Amino acid sequence: MTDPAPRRRPSRAAGTAFAWTVGAVLAVAVLAVAWVGVRGWLAYGHLREAQDSVAAASASIDDPAAAAALLGGVGDDTSAARSLTSDPVWHAAETVPWVGPQLAAVAHLAASIDDVAADALGPLSEAASGLSADALRPVDGAFDVARIAALEPAAGAAATALSGASDDLAGIDERPLLGVVREAVGQARDLVSEASVSADALHRATRIVPAILGANGPRTYLVAFQNNAEWRSMGGIVGAVAQIDTENGRISLGAQGSSGDFRAPAPDDPVVALPEDTLRIFGTRPARFIQNVTQLPDFTMGAPIAREMWLRETGTAVDGVIALDPVSLSYILRATGPITLPTGDVITSDNAVSLLLDEVYRRYEVPAQQDAFFQSAAASVFQALADGRADPAALIDALTEAGEQRRLLMWSADAAEQSVLDGTTLQGALPVSDDDRTAFGVYLNDGTGSKMDYYLHVDVETAWCGADAASLRVTLRNDAPDPATLPAYVTGGGAFGVPEGQALTGVYVYLPEGAVLQDQRLSSTGSAASATTDTDRGHGVVKWSVQLAPGQQAELLLKAGTPATAELGALLTPTVYANETSRVGVGCAFPE
Image (cartoon, rainbow, N blue to C red; front, side, top):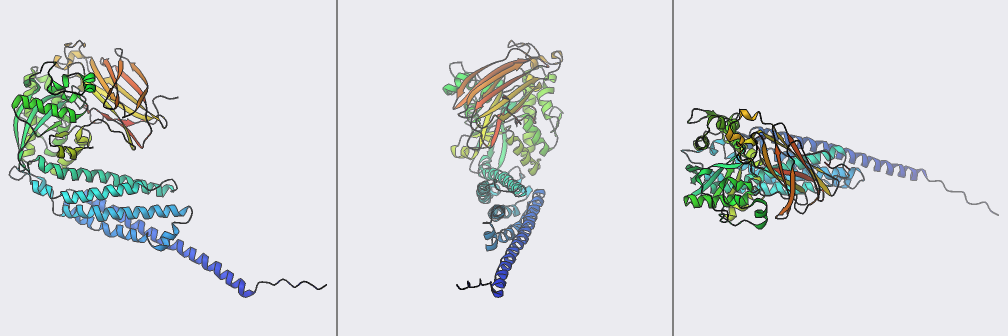
């Protein structure tokens, strides 16, 4: 028997080769990590520089040429960041578990921001470089409508680019991302989304403003002034109206009137036929009285009625209808500065609301005198705008704020122009719910026949109740002083059966489209509140009636079955108080 052959030992050369191989792999890995790390840090620096440039440009918005110069260098930084995060080594590292999704998200983010810089900031910078704030001031009483229209191509390109980038960033999967990366993606997504909304608004404005100002021929508009001291769904009762005429950028004030100047058709003869759902809920009054056209919670329905009423009274078929309230005027007065009225009063952004909705009723007992004061105030503010006294940037901010709060509404008789307003707050349409957003509508209407709503406050809160339901809480409170200190015109004097100082309110809650009412609860320290249900154009409607004396409050709780979405909210009637808006609560109003 022979001894087995001795086991061969690995040669020194083989061991050395293996060690070198492992070392080389480790070295390549270290170099790759270092490469990715250094390039990632450099990319971060470039994105920060781009962010700082955009912030500086925003701060220089009053000087568009300077802002354009600052934006000019943004593309260099975003392009560098994109290049640093798109080489083969970086792409290879994106396949590595755990760290790969972080790198892929950063590369995706850099590419999207670079697309924004190239396709959105570029056109806007080019347009801004040839436009100054003074170009938005009237010259010899006329606005340069051609110059405004010339911004449309650039604004359109920017809006398209930002919309695409917003959709692109929305596609990034945040689930595997670390906190710092997830936060960066979320911030970029929010910023681009906000910029997309702004660019879309600018594009719409460049399309419709020249036409409104008579660039294509004479235009005529009816302006309805809403009084928030007497609630209607869209804001307040229409107390005063004015006709505005425009041509080639020039604006002039035509006829003025008050609600008392309109004839009221017979109950069986409304100026237009209302849909069956609307008639069942509101009756014919919105189609018979100019005061009530804003009772309809849809300006696209109420505005054509106001147009028809004006046509019957004056024979003029206006091209559109605009509505605004005293709070909107207070915003505009920030841009114009104080204005002296024919009465000697000085109206300012600070006193406009109290002067128009409170003091005027204490000073004048006769409604005709009150109407004359309103008309003189509106005419004075209008004249200041026509004379170019408003700071353009401040005026844009004022109109934007009023529009976002649904205090400034617009409807056009031209279908193509009206389509430009589709989906905007200016349209004043019913709440829209879709795959991304769920929206209630809370519409307030006075039932006292008075101006007591100046003293009423409303609080609205929405919250999710799991994945398939949402709750809504509406709280009303009467903070009026001793009724003996108020004029009879403000309290109503008991004319409609409501004791002086008390306020009767009808609240119409529109549920999200397709939502099913699951529960409702009422509580009140005042008269017994009541609620009934109905439907209107795909919305369930809860009608709540409540009467409150000074110091009393009432609450309505609703729970509606509807799938949870990313956003939840409620459209609310604009009140005297600008800070009264709906909010999202931290918990369901119907705890298990």
